[in-house]
Length: 254
Length: 307
Image 1 (cartoon, each protein chain N blue to C red):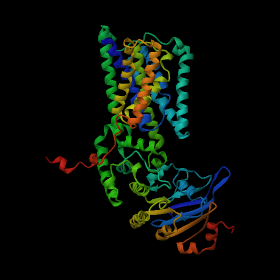
Image 2: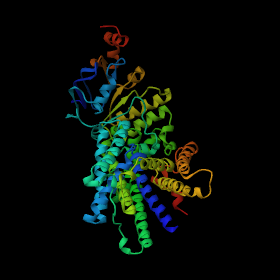
Image 3: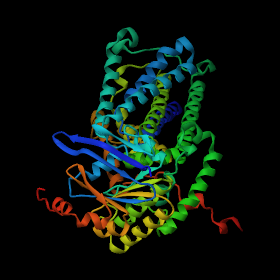
Image 4: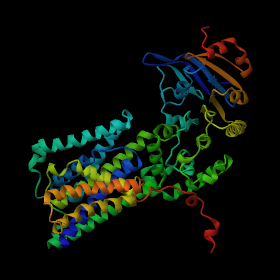
């Protein structure tokens, strides 16, 4: 099976610091792939690089066989590559409903001329998108807060909103950056449920996470990163049995 | 007295246009523009220089286009600059414009300024008549700009630029072309500032660099803050009340004898400052809040339709 997203030999330096050092790995269609590793292993840099926020110094990134190394984030989003953020970055002054209405691609009302002259067209899209938004908000239990400014949500609710928002991109792959961090256990269960449901609908996931219960519960395959490279890959059971992984986490020189 | 009221009304129109433009750029799109006065000056000078050559309406349109072009070009820098640095660049732009106007005598006549700019509708004859005609024209221009900007603010375009204001990184991850949207917002704002400059030149019929000081920018920010960031209706109220305060307090000298005119003019500015501070304490969101899309807009309730 050809990989959905492939990273080949990417390196990224920040001044003297090597965040990534010839890292090669792939995410497969229809799977949930975990990315784990100690702090500073390069997980977030890798995620930023996969979504166009950072360009690698060397190496390539490809999505569905297309080279996307130098593509802008908004192009990637339109190709169906979505992400959430580690520290929730909600669009605080937009209402919960507006957060979702923002996302659908190809809205004709985002053009200057069309927003004035093709009102009928974009209103039709708006109503259509609103139906989808309502379904999603009902699914994650936030519909009753639709008209609230999203800045007022709790941390966990923001994470759910962040995830729901990406779904309106109709993504093929969603990269989650620590979805479990700072989330209460019941909401964590909710996130697990939603991610599993989406997987069954054919969405692939990349999951950066420190909570091993979450990784164990969700991931089909796990990549372990250490010092900017891929240490090893395998099922959760396989990688956690490996001595090198334990050492990488505990910081003992291999 | 009625001539004086006409003057104030035209000044309010100019302030409203500048404020509406800044409300798009800063209020909605979140790009700080401290060079507002530069774009107004470009509009005024372009209009003054071109209207004898091509006629007043084409001159106004070229002025707007020129200002839009400069404005959009400046916004392109936002690809390389963080928000605060763009703000500094816009201050620089305003200063550069002022210095060019002051020193390029061959084009701008330097500190002497350009006199005898012919005002549209002056062929109507009686002085007061053409003042009124020009006022109506100014009001129409404000109305048109308001409709245009309010249409944009309430469309998905407005939502997208508000999202970019809140967080450009997240917006780009959600597929929004951040730079393109910022450039558009900035250019449209620039065009309207250019039109405000054109009104200024036509009304005063004489322009010189001393009319384009940073205080113009400050008034525009005050109007946006007072009216409520993002709200065009609030902006009209804000610009109206600030100009009314500024101009209305001129008459205080007839009632207050303990301080002289210079002190009074300083006091008037201070009064505006105090007003803004009080407003920010008691109503920090401004007079009117920005337009949002609520549930009821997209899901009209069944029970509201049936009587």
